[in-house]
Image (cartoon, rainbow over all chains, first blue to last red; front, side, top):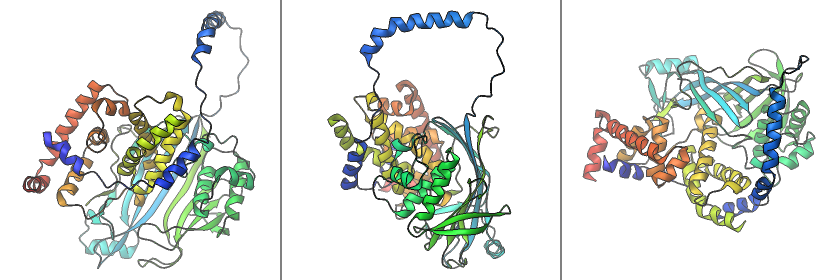
Length: 336
Length: 157
């Protein structure tokens, strides 16, 4: 037992080298940001007796019988809910006989202030993508676990187990390092130039900026900010306007296509970001092939998320029964 | 500001390592940058031993990353690791997320028990109980027939 931790220490994944230039650049950017003002202890000490008196008065007033109140308007909706239907493709199997599987699941996400609750892998399943892929899987003996092509892991075919995660992180994480600026969307300019200046205080690639703008448009922002975001996407280097995109749910949307960086197993990819022209709300983000790869033709969506719901709601999060909050997520991608 | 810069330079590699281990190398630098951005904003609350506090922030960001990352972007490890290491990681990943956190904070990130307890927001006594149980479960996972070969290879190495 004593050696378990020692052996585990030797199994630590490799850690990237510190990029000293980036480290110093980030430090310079961070210390240029404003800080939260610390509460002044002296101030608190001086006014504490007054605060106690005020609290007593408030208590007395609250305890008095209240006159009949007029009907109050409903409280503002506390949750921002995003329900996504996600799909992605992965090439699996032996190198001589590869085939494609499709991951499909929903992510149901509620955010209120710093609190975020998400149900991931909801209604999730991994299965062969097309009829030929199904035949290849059958010919391989319908394995439950298949190796990734060109990766070090395997994929579990079949249903996924849902998981519930709760955290207290606000803002737009991971799309950029501009956490401080995006903590609140209230002061995000709605005009494309102002928005660009706010989101891109230093030079970033067109795709990084596009990714950030898309994240803003999915978040709890105003309609005019969404419209500004879409205009900004259209103006980016390499962006192409899409005036008729057929939606999986029927109907058509308008969107922007922008060249995307290579992804696992696929190069030659562009991202389509499609909105409902009536409401301005995003309906689809899709990565499509710009060249035929692994037997998949041009314009095949290799990953996609449809936004089934983007709304403010008073309804409390609906969680699956019997699934512990922050329990283990059983990913369909497993160690080989 | 000098204090923050000193803490930043001292703790950056540790936070980067934490982020890389739990969210993968691709996201590690962004998570580290965001961790220190939040730390700067809340620097009035920064304790004198800042590392556990910083890892607590990074931990929340890693969780957020897991929710936002699409399935094919999940953390991947190089395929050239030796068999014992692969088996040990497999045993680790068979444990609950809570057990994995307890074990890796000690074994991978070199924290003392009191520091690891601070990251997880529990008392040191509770942490020791959790660590003991997690070690027992990891040991049990390794002693299943599936992991016999890994155990043998450690004996001979």
